[in-house]
Amino acid sequence: MTANIEGLEAVTVHIRDIQKARQFYGAVLGLKEIQFDGKAGRAVFAIPGTTTTLRMHLYDPEEGGREPGTVSGIVFSHHDPASACAEITRLGGTVTDPPHTLHPPGFTTTLSVIADPDGNEFVLRSPPAPTK
Image 1: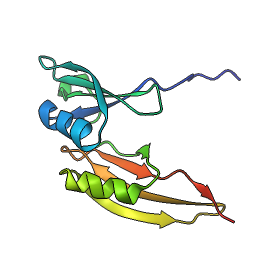
Image 2 (image 1 turned 30 degrees about the vertical axis):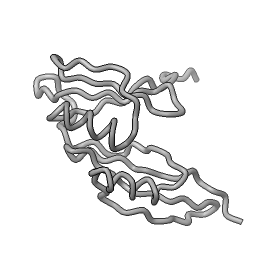
Image 3 (image 1 turned 180 degrees about the horizontal axis):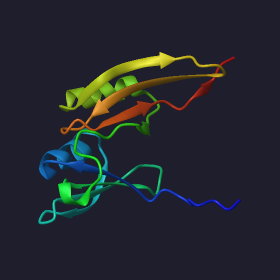
Image 4 (image 1 turned 90 degrees about the vertical axis):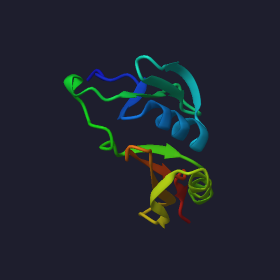
């Protein structure tokens, strides 16, 4: 069977305020902004370690898709989610589920959930470590 999907180019989230979003994704999360169009209310950020970009733009109900604040399930990685969450909080970000360690069969991982100013949520997870 031939794969119908060959990669992931970008993840897009709808937002209500482009300046608040730029502050959060740039200054709080530390992502590098690679494109900004103030007239269109759009910004693009590089996701470290990937060629995938995180795109955001002002929500237009006519275009369809998810409303701001309804995104969840996107997983970012960090070697130490607890320290990352502490820094995110210090910089004014929101942690909606504090870091906690899980021990599913075969590996251990720490994860937490953070939210942007619109309430879009992202999982922040450490790389899985094999259990011994």
